[in-house]
Image (tube, rainbow, N blue to C red; front, top):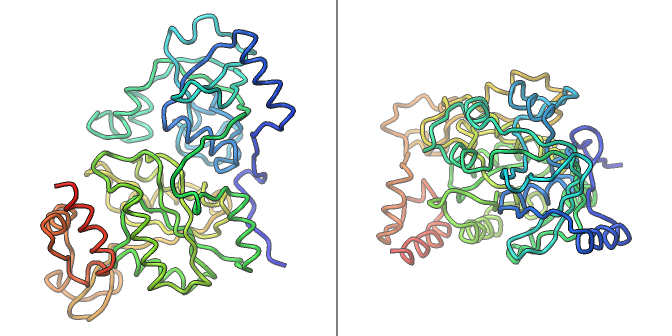
Length: 389
């Protein structure tokens, strides 16, 4: 019988309130002058992922002992590996009158109550330390650091009870919770599933490493991130179109699946590689592709830092098998896709285009070479870039 890999911590968390509990909590929020805190888009996404178990074993936003251990040691207080803080910030005005033991109504941008925070702790947010430890820099030009410094000065810790889930109107066919992906994997008889994280369109180099991975597993979960990203990243709807055409024409339909990953990008490089791997384990993946600059931005991280960081943990602690890939490209001399691990030829034979060069070509209606990207993907991207001129 096909069984799923255990989730991180051994149990898939569910923090969605039952119908009966929901009515009680909403009544308290309405009639007992409960303090309200409005969440931003990343906090709403994190809340929903906690609620459905994507961030198992977290049951809420981190209290100080977990937060400190994650920042300092990449572990929760119980020793379980965890590399990125998951926090809720609040201003001095918002925490006025709040005490541990209080319930706090968490509201969305429309001022609707979406969850109740069962407040356990209020503590000061050391933004400089978090930036340096988690992102490796306190440079506010780094998008992850910029977000940290824009957060409020206090952090609220405690379990959550979600009373109304976020209602995204996009990619509904691909929005699958961990329980749903796990059920589908079992139904399809997949024992070994490799997850692929991306916030970019898939070009030939990505396709090559995905298909290399497919040679050793039963199936691939193409799991593009659709949460908040940098303003200059390609919009999620454009990326989804490119994934759809690739899967339709170039992947075995019984061994590939597309589902969206709702998380926001942190751009935390190596730490985010660990984070992404653990969350894909919660979705039921047994393997995870780690590129040479996973979740990187600019030149903040070393070329293979996202690979080396896995050496800081025992394999059984992580519980999902990382598949490490070098930089890949089309080699004219090899007459095919290759990497620095497999290709003996001079770089003059390698077709490698910078993102700037590709964007220029697409915006001018010029197709990148088929050795770089499939023409169907190039067409989708070209239409997008030309529409933004």
